[in-house]
Length: 339
Ligand code: PHE
Image (cartoon, rainbow, N blue to C red):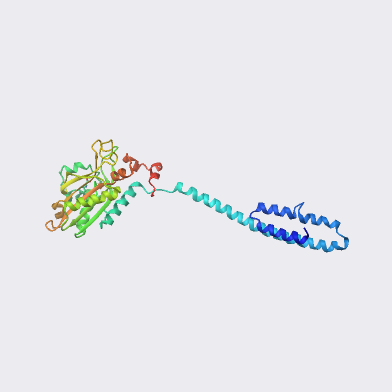
């Protein structure tokens, strides 16, 4: 190769270089100890003396030019390499990130789903205080002082006369009926408290109350509303049974059972052999309760229901111990990420 060929070949080689390692190889090929340029410099001894000056100048110009090109390429490739490294380590960060991301508590998820279903059916979402007036929690719900039903719900009292920790979400019914005119279609999610503590009962748990007050509201509407809700909640057809029961604030009253989701009704440990699981209480609002809140029971009828959120959540996710909800064990909680 003559000098011009060496120069143009070097430029071509340089254009194909992709990284610093390749650059070093190409650089050695031309400027290294046995490189073309180095060898060409040694050639000078064999050049006739009168041509040496010109030859030397030419080779030095080419050498300088190539050195500049290599330097420029080296800087460019070094920058690219740093950027690649940054990019790679950034990717690593995002890969490890999900390990530390939290999850929405299964009870919160269940509450959100319940609210969503009722919002879709045109209900509003109401709230009431957890420290509640004794009269709202009991008296106005047709549970007078000496009524045995007060024993059904072992109560936490607070050291202020007339107040307690609400034992159910039903006092929110009272608050809404006292402050709003029918038609009323509402649900009230929230925490409730009872002096109960065993593997299936927690002293703090959650309920969602439902209340409808309207001119024609009847038992059939209630049944339909509850059945639609349960089908939406469990995302499949579930057998539903209404069993006659008693609550002082509803008449008639019923308890709602669903066919056991674990054994399909055949009988198992979860349903204690019966094939059915109780998920809520319900009934037609007692006329006395309507009147207590200034609603004319001749003009309006109502129905109400109250469901246990932990119960529904356990059935939905297949959780077998209520205490798991309150221990905040991350190994438990992380299993319930939003999908
Ligand atoms: N408040 C009742 C309970 O906690 C449930 C219920 C609500 C029953 C509304 C009937 C109507 O057990």
